[in-house]
Image (tube, rainbow, N blue to C red; front, side, top):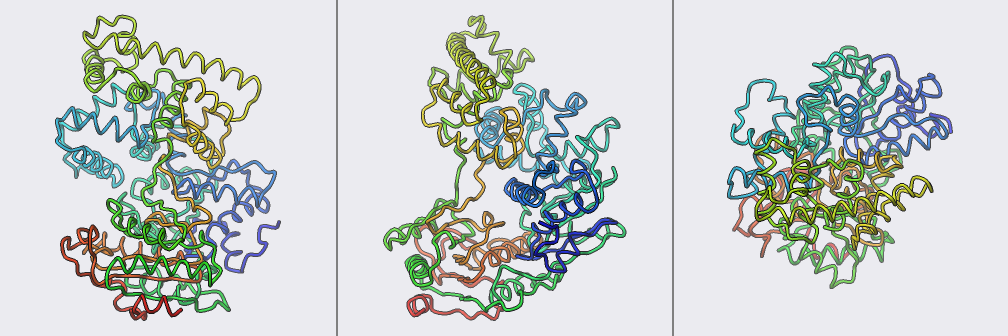
Length: 639
């Protein structure tokens, strides 16, 4: 396949441009990922650029997987260029230079989400004697914000000294680094360490979803460009929705000012949305007078599509009629269930999803709820499998020892583990050496030493047996699945099958085939399940999770001012809500339905900007659109 096969002229021009930094402005459905993949192909085949000198960075591992797959299809048989998330790239560079990073506990070990929630936050809450876990979370969120905005370098912060002291003591005892600081630590290293070595020289740096980068991320990209990389950034300021991690659309808007001589490469032809869907989406985006007008237009011959704003008397009528609508779309319009997305802005305690699911069950329409999905690795079997696997790679991993102490059936409770931590802290030890001391001499820790010793010996036995199986795995060249399965069997972990499948999925998406490489990939990524559409069912997701997805039909529930924008009434938060609505609208290809209720009853009455009041009003982002509200029940039954 030629690099320009099936590309329209603007896509071909964008894919083949070289000579200076460039900004690819790509609205929804204009072929951004296709152009990025074909650009890589063009650089390799037409410009003779070695694949190792091409680096592509994405925001999520799902995006990295998609781009990697497209590049592999475009350039079959060639060595793969580097494609990864920015966090994964940062971790790899820090690991390569770990001995130079005096400020970080060695060896470099990244705490994942489960460990942050169940070990780090819980311990800091106990150390500081905080009444609620949310208070510990807020302290860490403020710290992350300081890294993301670079406020930590500008002298504009006043961190709580007791918290900082507790955290530094805790991280030294357990030997971890937070994922939130990975990019910041790379930024510091690039700027401060003259001998910091990157994994390979980069001549061409492609950055996807540039609008999702925060100040710290942007500083890393700047440092890479100063090392000789030609930047090719792609994105859309209208789709910047991660303000909670301090991303801002000004990053992509200001790119030509930040990089002199940068060229704009617009993609304007939307091949996804029917005309009416794109019209309403562009209207909402244009409410921001500072946006970049990309001139996005539907491809020639695109039909109008079906777009409707549906009003209901209350949320119970809404749920019942939405279930009926989905049934009609499946039976009358011939749409497969998985081609229908239902999107929610919020779903606190299942307030929105519960009545919807009940209505779907009553109507016989299959539905999958992924609103608050959790990783299989967050289950006790999955967490134990991961803990044993990590200890096989590094038996000094204090976090994994503590995880197994917490989850295995043993006699270790909160008091014994607190005593173990205090023992290690008082002697200036990592937790793992402290465990060994107590295991060999239980009298060192009165009351709890014998229990810790017995459990340590039990885990050592499991590790010894698993290590023998892994030697067979390496000798017999078993699959990664076989290795993980043997670890689960050796450790007698019942119900680990789902976790094994999840780990194999992570390995496939990261492009790795060995256990050590899988563990590195896991350290750099969020272990929560990224959205995957369940076939044979209508899929219910939050609006944030829908980014990157498309569907034949999209139904957005609760487009009310009390929820969208809700309590946000000033920039930049107001802009985030507006752009989130735009992203949700433009997931639809042919059918788009927006619903709102004049009254929210039951649990839903307690949510939103005016909790306790049942009355609801149409979102301010939709009041002035060409769409007029229609009686929802009548519209659905008449279509």
